[in-house]
Length: 397
Image (cartoon, rainbow, N blue to C red):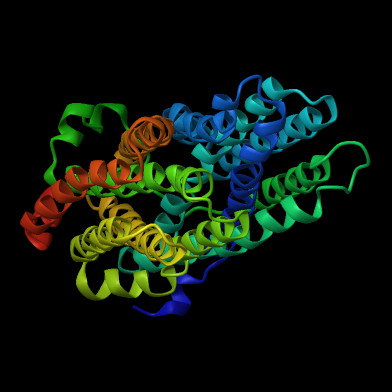
């Protein structure tokens, strides 16, 4: 694998677009609970906007894939960025009007935009030779590091940019990011691929029965589901239940976000060297550290170790699963296969996020950690049984 062949114009554009998408997402995650605590009609709804962000993504995955199958990657991605821009403008208006309903609607729209943004990784893999797909996905995800920094910065610095409307300035900046990236995405030039001939595209049943496809989806679903479940519960457990400061809580979440994306510097190499399944298996095993640290104690160090391991495990499962998915279907089936994958992964992620608060409230932190064990165990057992080369070759027959 030679890194320079991976750094083509498409991958660079997609990495920049990824940075903008994560900036918007992290801004909503950073401010969602704060805004909700002031605007929500009841305290129980304070984090609703954060959950709606994920619900919007899950609900729009099939629509995003369908749109790009009709109008192409460039225009489809630009449309998604436009939806994100509209969402950010609605969030700005919500700050002006002090409307919780409008803010939740804005978060939902930005979640829809994320459904398009989550397909950047597929476009990156399609823009390079198959042997470089892991690197292309990793480089695209590295753009998230910029978003992980810009999101909190916009949240903090934009608080009083517009007098009388706290945080309105934050969402003006986010809207600007989406708008600029939308124009940039129109410059994507995807390689020529086989024309999709409907009669040559297998049905959903034939695609999902493929063992390699099942493993790819399982890896992403477990990684995202466990990550969303534990991450959503962490601020409640740390700050509300255990009384750790907001600064410590924010630092743990920031460390988690960085741990999600920083390993992308190496994940592409690891996928090329050891194969997707082995990297995914390593990710599932790393999630065991999350469980061990979670049960070990409730100090900042325990939360930090647990959340950092959660981020690294997610990265290995997500990058490995995305790379593996490309070998689990025929080229002309890519949009259908990607839609099924993302609908499953983000549907489970949304369920994890929505249920985390309920589990925390009624059963506590140990229950959150304990309920993650079966999913991690299933992933480890399944990944350990896959034969990489034979199944890969059989997958596209």
